Length: 245
Figure (cartoon, rainbow, N blue to C red):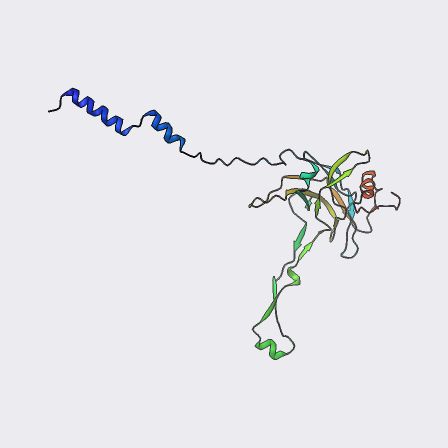
């Protein structure tokens, strides 16, 4: 029969068997590998800033063949990153109503979206018996661009008229077709670094309101700015009001 002292000794022995000594516990911890911690990669574009340094003011309604660019040429200055980093950026321009409620960059015409044309339509017999068709978009459903021209701009490293270097996005050939009215341009800046997810704009800036006139109401081109002339001399395809630069 166990005495009270025997029970205490047995309990201490059981505790030593199930709880390792401190040096044994430390040796076990030394064999464990720390779990990798995924820290967010700092973006080089966290501190960038955009400013529209040349605002659009007017344009004449354009046709498919007769295109009249928005003037003055919209120019945006990029700050907060290096010229090397700016190679990974691109800017997209879109046309909006003056109240910013409607994206007017393009429109869809109503109608059936597709037409089905037999591959061999040279005879009535082939039309009735053929099971192979070409599927073509119907003209009544085609997307019509209201804002025409080059809607994307890469970043340009240029000198301003004071010989200061800077980074700029320039849209020299944007034009508006179909209808006159008052509009704004929206500029979205995107990173070209792949993320595996849907891209969202890094920054967005919106122009002042500008007016598009019918041909008979157009007050004429404004004098080309010193900034536009300066950038044209550096290779940007900006059309001048006069041939003198």
